[in-house]
Each structure stands twice: as C-alpha cells, then as structure tokens.
Length: 72
Image (cartoon, rainbow, N blue to C red; front, side, top):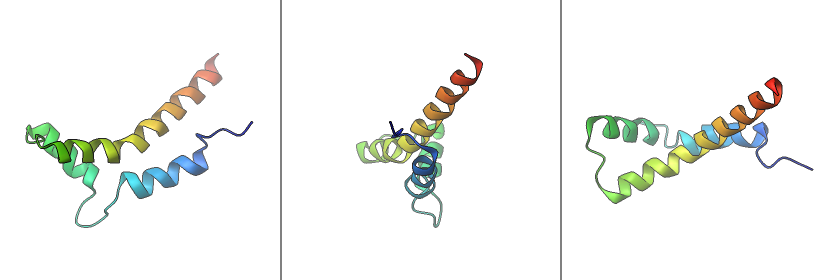
C-alpha cells in the first residue's frame, strides 16, 4: 500500500505552499512574527497562518512516525 504521506510529496508541499509567497517574505514568517508580537487578531490572518502551517505539521508528523518505527 502506498503511503499518502510520502516525503516526495510532503517536501515539495512544504517548499511551495508552506513558504509561498517567497517575496518579500514568506507568509508563514510574517504570521509567526505577528503571533509572537500579539498582533495576529484578524480572522484572515489566523486562517493564513493555519493554511501555510499545515504542510509543516504533516511533515513533522511523518518524521515523528518514522522515528517511532526505528526505536520500536
């Protein structure tokens, strides 16, 4: 059975969707800065943070899952 969370799918997803747009700075960086300064208040900004963060969450889940297989 083919794994839907394959690295050859997740890594391009993180690079393209996670960091888009690339100029002047990635949205994920902007939204994390807003979160750290307490200015992330508008619903569109919160949605934008979630939208650009979910590929990172999936990649981290896959790495965690693979590390669990190695130790178990």
